[in-house]
Image (tube, rainbow, N blue to C red; front, side, top):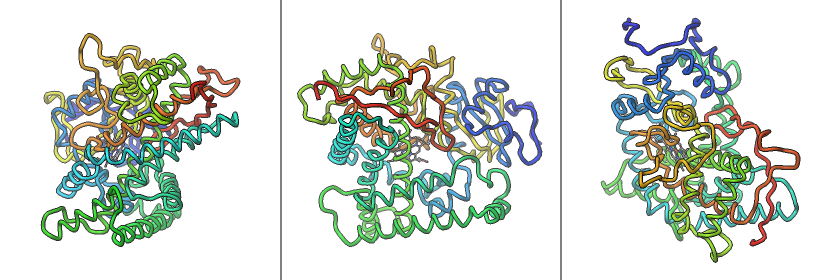
Length: 484
Ligand code: HEM
């Protein structure tokens, strides 16, 4: 019953039940960007009815700035999603938990105890060992003169780093974990039934199509696996550095002494799984896009290799993490990759808990509205970026002493990790994982496109899904550099 003039603009052609869903193709960030260009308001966004969800879509830096600066609290919850709820022990993780005491405490545990600078530093030997193994695999391909599928090369690395940090797991346990991750991801591509119709009706549809059974089997298999890992951790005290499971179990012991956060076994499993799911895919997608952009822009690759050679001169076979801080161009490349290819192009959906009068009261967004922030479109916002489609890391090198734009949630034109209360807590964990892999791969090899493929021929469009790797997996040929 709200006055229409107070609602942000909407596209025409709203259908019963579907609302505007029929206007969304299989790459929602691209469809939503096009809809924004046709019907949206640059300072506010666009209001859509996506199935049963009234959805505000924000596609510009100006609109993101207004929302995150002035209305972050109102939009700090997550929409309920039955599939995610089941997979997360009833939203007992961080990413999908609704705003409230549980989320606040769980996020605090993650930020303070699992992802603190000290803890991230403690995993440096894990990263160094896995980077060395990444280089060894690339070296074998180079010596055999074989092209490599970058996704396979990279996933092995990000999976291993994350799983070792989360649960100290290697070998067959890590392999089982890898399979479970891949199978779960395949089940949650695209809009789900409960986005369209009420939960009960969605359940009937999922049962009829056999999807419910598949979800239940998957949830059971994850639980069996995580329970085994918790049991193993309870049995043996850690030798060496603690992994996330060790830390969570210790926090629980402290709680029993009245000092910590009340964690059940399910809570521990939910948080550990959250860390692994949130970290593995995002980092791998970012690395695959980085390699694609470097293969497509030989000038940037050569300049980056020059920096790495200068800074890491004389070091051993792998790049020392301490040297990464002196590689300013490497950081600029990472930023430019995340600007054009945010691994979660629509971040994670939010939901408003109260009405919000945005743009100084010009528009009113009712409570219970889903918010999609199109980071992919914001990275291409012509009001925020010069020549937005160009891959030009130099734009991030601070000119004349002005501070360079950063991705930590205060420069709203670059928000691949989100912003505000729900910002990603894993930035400090992700950065050395990304930078060490890139520096190691570029230090030892030149990466060429297979014979006959020209940079201009490369397909730079994303695959459908929550995260967005290249739809055509990148294949490149490593050539051992003369100095390696
Ligand atoms: C390149 C790597 C990564 C990218 C691009 C990324 C991106 C994101 C984004 C966009 C969000 C949603 C933010 C929002 O709603 O505003 C998020 C949330 C989250 N990320 Fe990351 N992430 C990355 C790596 C990691 C890592 C390494 C971890 C943990 C080890 C992690 C843990 C989480 C968690 C727990 C949340 C939920 C936060 C909340 O709901 O309060 N992420 N991430």
